[in-house]
Image (tube, rainbow over all chains, first blue to last red; front, side):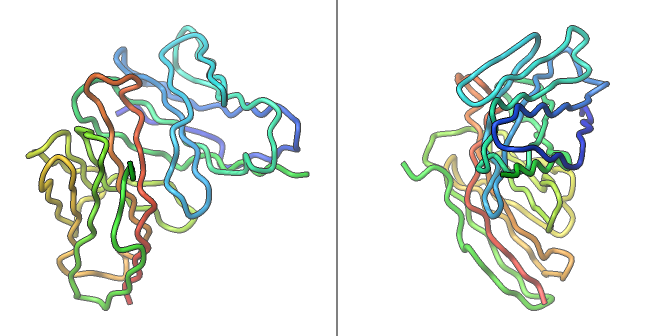
Length: 112
Length: 116
């Protein structure tokens, strides 16, 4: 399983863009990169998934360089409600059941 | 459409007691997962089930057993609870087959377990 490394915590202010980088040096050819968000006392919630280059949805953007050894989750103009823990996962994107493991995550604190 | 439901929401056990955590999903998903989350920590995978009738160990399976009763239900059993199993337990499901993105999991609200 590809191991991921993320910063333990980050601080930001309302209205700023936040970029959280995840390192996954031993990512496999079949692996996709998935990001989740978790609020206190809740289960994680899927944010975005990508394989290469850039993926954008209504919540975030995901930037993946050509070597795919890292990825960056970008949250545009964060608000206080974006304060949460963000997890990066790497796993094969297939039909079979796969062992989806979470790392320690990045605790994002958005300040007024 | 309730998504993923877990029972109970809270439980207090004494060391050595046994209990079963229940999880059910109504999204017709193939894969189901059990995670534990200790205070201030990330989630750790206990067991998962790729499909009805199959189960596999995750990162921290010791002290737990699971049953994939049918496609909807996946239970987690603690045979002899220990204080080290005090944690929040999350169940999740994943469509896997025929739905993109395959790795999108849906989580239940969690069960907060305290073992004294």
